[in-house]
Length: 113
Image: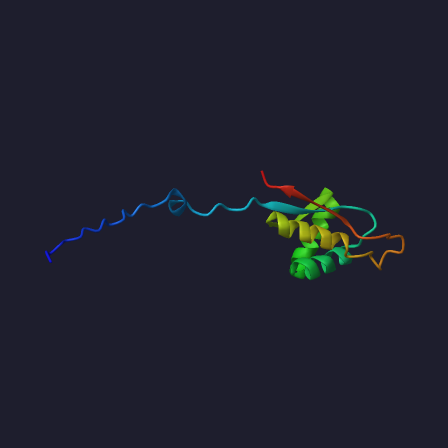
């Protein structure tokens, strides 16, 4: 038999566009707490501590901001997490310190522009 040399083509290393680009970041959303007359500072501080794990001082600052400005941003996060936190605020229940309180505070999510 005759010696045969077989040539094997080497595959070219080609970087795809996807490999060059960094992963796309998810859009961010604010969880916004809205003011009302039916909830105390203590309620807001407790809710911020339980739902967001904010320290008491930060919970107080959010309560003060809601009271003075009508709303406060509790958290900035992804859409899914923001929806969860908004729903947890809505389910937190009434303020036991205020007899006229009928239920939870109001919260919305807003995209960051």
